[in-house]
Image 1 (tube, rainbow, N blue to C red):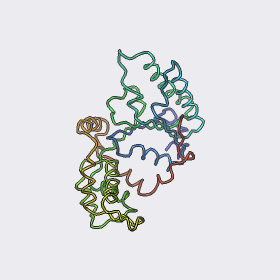
Image 2 (cartoon, rainbow, N blue to C red):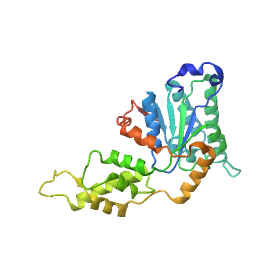
Image 3 (cartoon, rainbow, N blue to C red):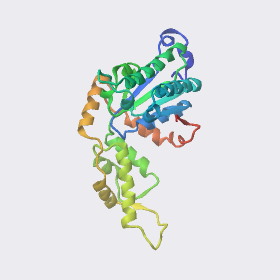
Image 4 (cartoon, rainbow, N blue to C red):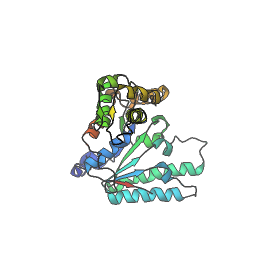
Length: 282
């Protein structure tokens, strides 16, 4: 809304607050990065995709300069979105055993982040993590919008299968049955399963007489693929994430992966590849 309706932040309570932070948390492979890209695309805003290794440096004081440069660039591109992947690696919980430079890194980021409210021109920061309990409390306070993205249910898994198999020729496959037998699979796991099924066809049914023969995926190919692909999310990780979801989103505990599958099916992410759509910070 700050991007689409900037006038709404020129008066009242919204002109005095800077709630421009969102936390996407959930198991790995559930589409958190895709959802952030889709938001940037639908808003028509540039996106700065920040990797944790790009912000850290072995030289003392260098990381602070990089952080300052990041926020300077974000302010020039504003309105924009800054996406921080693997936020737990950047913003781990502080304790007495921290080294000085580790604490200074987080303090500098928080200072720059807090300074955005002075001009009201700061970007919207989206952080994603698989380990929300490991993020420092001061960072969580600056991420008031917490979105739980959980594992897909059977209906959502069927939608994801449709997306990955829409250009494939399938025979004797009922996607609803396939979705029912993949309980606990993430979106990434389903992608890997479809890829392994296609490779199973190439290993067993590829015709040397007709090298350009089109793949026909059958039940036996997915049976072979399931021997290689298993759910990648362990129960311990799910329990930790569900505990956070019950505390932060008690009224909306249902996962929102269906929104990701709907965005993908509309083709929103089809062209989010080039520098005009996503900016990388180096």
